[in-house]
Length: 256
Image 1 (cartoon, rainbow, N blue to C red):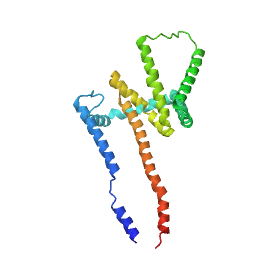
Image 2: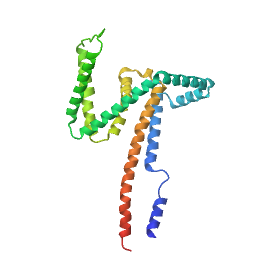
Image 3: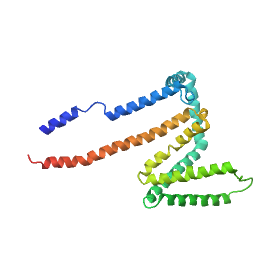
Image 4: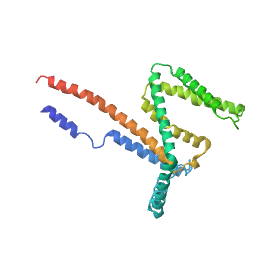
């Protein structure tokens, strides 16, 4: 009876909204507030960080215009036709590329447990170099000219090869020892986002961004965050599930 009363009081004492949920809401509100501050501060281009009110107004104007739905239907018909004519081959190539990338990541996870990441990097990149050299030799050479890089271009190529390829790839293999292949592939899917952000910062190419870019980034970030939240939920549920039977057995074994 006392145990039932304690369980009833513990259930009744649980808040309607958990502290974790409140923290997530606070983070979302903080991100929106920072976005609005940057939009009005003038630190960035308004094309890159427009005001939230401007986004909402533009969305309302777009959805309330009658021509939008007609144009949407025409666009959907064009997309369907393009998919039927030539998009199927592109989708097949994309699915094949993703499948091969998944196999590559799974094999890396399998072998990195028993091998040195630096040695694996050397073997894989050397194999890729040999294969591409053989493929290039088999291709027709008409009009093919390989220019000799200057001193500046050669230095940039060295930085690209070592700083942007060898070192990150070796570090990723080392990190793969402590994470799953699925999590590593999700992190790798953020690579286009990193590249575009660097292009904005270093090359000033923010004016080429459109709504499709933000939609793609939102999908990628939502997928990564959803996986992280599900992983945390599973990690919390596992100890509770394993601890439950032991507590129940101890309660049955306790003398009256």
